[in-house]
Image (cartoon, rainbow, N blue to C red; front, side, top):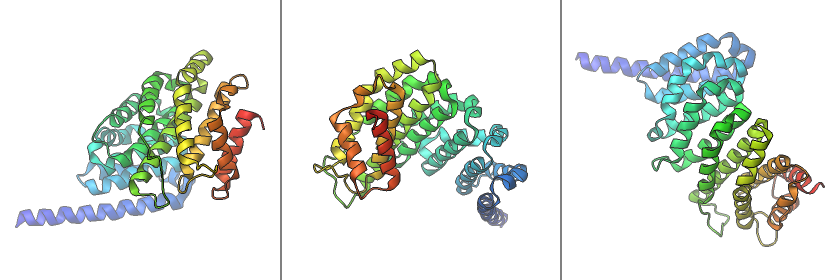
Length: 317
């Protein structure tokens, strides 16, 4: 029947589109910046054509390819934002789309890192959607860490102009730090514990992004923001230190990303308060955390280097 023929035709079109965007995604990685720049209009037109179709299954690949494209061509991707934004923004506003929402968040992080301040015109919608998503009871647990990290990426991208979003963001992060962790973690690292660790890493990354981004804000305003929220950030780091570092001073298994992000935030806080304010960071739990990371043979050199940098920023040694 004609209905069956139409259904078969649409299925065939969808299959071709899925193969096509797969080829485009691979091509972007192979071509690199100069090649992607040369074929940018053709690539974006294919992405937009598929996004405009009802082929939902291929949309995630399109969003992911757009983010990858932004990373390859950097600031030049800003010229395509007006075209791609209706689709990125649409998926960003719908947390019930699950993996499609998360793919949009990751793509926006890629775009923010690529075009930096040129993303400003879209930030009201982006930040509003991210904060709304994090307040939604229907947001999947696995989508929370990249959503939090995206706030940090936006703050870094627009710098001091993130001031208008600072208070609602910091308030939400404070609420997120109250999410409890089990007091005892074992080497099996169950899935639920991994989700919690990812969430806490996302919180730390968001805090670091906001602190670093707002360093470009008026000095008095920046100093007041750090002062108001310092106790919460240190309380969170204390909980991490007490939970993630064993009695003997060694980090527990599987927690390196959280520990590294904690040390990174301490670097940012040390830099933010300056030599006259670091005494407030010189606490027993900070020292325990840093020494545990520095002395551990289980952690990578990258993590130990961040811990050493934090120790120098706080203790001057």
